[in-house]
Picture (tube, rainbow, N blue to C red):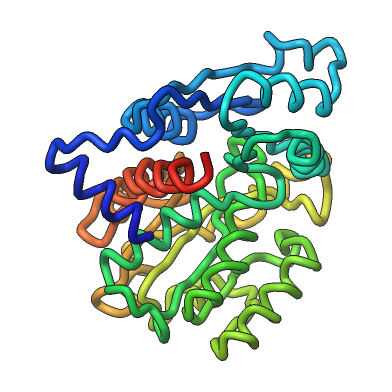
Length: 301
C-alpha cells in the first residue's frame, strides 16, 4: 500500500515512474470489463510498459488450446499474464493451471472465487479515509437486489476473507439463498479469530449498517443454492427491499462511507441519493484500482 500511495502521489504531481520500461503484460479477458481492463492497461502504460488485450474467442483457446501451451508460449514472449475468468467452477482452476505452467507472474484480475485487486483498492480507500490503523473499524458487507444478471461471488468472498486480517470487524448480511462458499465462510471465521476481531453472518439487511464505519452493499448470485439462471433471477426478485437508501445510511455512524466496486444497478441496488451523495467514495475506490495494480505489477514483474 505504501508503493501504491507513492505512485498515486507521483501521478498527481505529474512525475513519471517508469518502473516497467519495455515490459509486456498479456491481459486475457473471458468476461466484459470497464474498470479492470482500463486500469491495468493504463497502469502498465504509465509504468513504461505495454499491455496487450486478449479475448479468448480471438485466441486458439477457442479451438481448444490448453492452459499449459498458452502459458508456456506467452511466458516466452512477455513479462506477465493477467486473467479475468469468472465462470463458476471454471475460473479459478484455469488461473491455477496457467500459473502452474507460466514462468512469469500470473495476476488474478477476478475469478469465480476471488477478486484480490478490488479488495486491495477497497482497503487503500479505507486507509485514506480513516488512517493507516484500521483496527476496530466496523465494515458491513451486504447483499443487494439487482435482477439484471447473475453477478459473481468473488467480491464478497474476498472482502470477508481480507478485512478481518486488516483488523476490521465484519458483519456479513444476506438472505439464506445467497450465502457464500462454506469453506470461504469458515476461513473468514478463522481469519477473524486469528486477528482478534469480530465476524458475524446475519440475514437482516439493517444489521450491516448499524453502527458501521464502512458499508459495501452489492449484488451477487445465489450460486451455492442454484446455478440455474432463471431460478437465480427469480430469487433475486424475491428480496426487492434489500436496497441501500438514505434511511439505511442513517443507521451507521455519522462518518460512515458508502463503497461499491461498480457497476452498480442504480435504483435497484442503491438510490442515486446515496451513490451520488457525500458519503459515497465509489470514484475514489475505482481510481485506487489503478494505483494498487500499478504497485502489484511493479513489485512482481
